[in-house]
Length: 114
Length: 110
Image 1: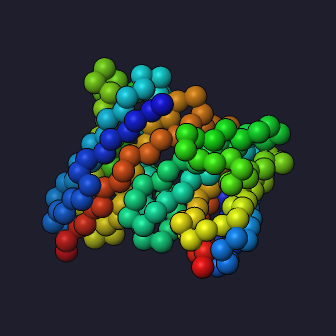
Image 2: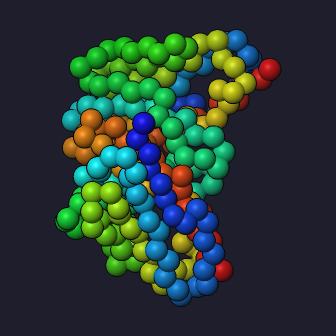
Image 3: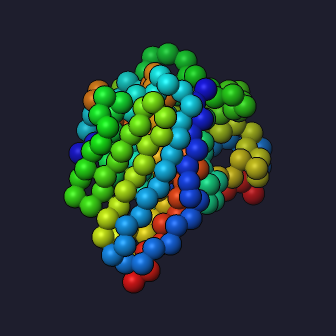
């Protein structure tokens, strides 16, 4: 089946620093990847849609300069949280879409900003 | 954009009973409706999906129904087991984006 990996699984950083999260589709090519944010006991909130080779499309209310997304290849998308603040602490999940339109989720990254 | 509403937020059933979770969507252009199961601390896993040209789909104890006219779709789990306990999310997709419901926490009591 389609496998999506995410790295790191957990990261703790200091306020003001930047953190990069990687999302990889391991056994299929993903023309589109999505980045979600999930607060405890809440639903997944779509942050942005990432298309290979083009600029990401951000959802309303998501700061594109703060959450930098790069989709350089058909198997890799990265999310960089710049100048992180404690309110950025959350669970970040990526997903990748295969050609059959299935969407497969990565295991998530728990970000804690101190 | 799309607005997906999901009910109930919590559902408690006795083992062996059925569970039904309902979702509504707003964008008539949505044409793909997956359901995901998320266990605590884990990623969402696709359990069943349905496309807009189909009214019902079944996979063992799980079934999904879709009413395009009314813009609502439902997840039905029969003969529930304790391992079905998790949070379930519906989603609606059209034009490449997925929008999720708020989730239903299902508790199956042994």
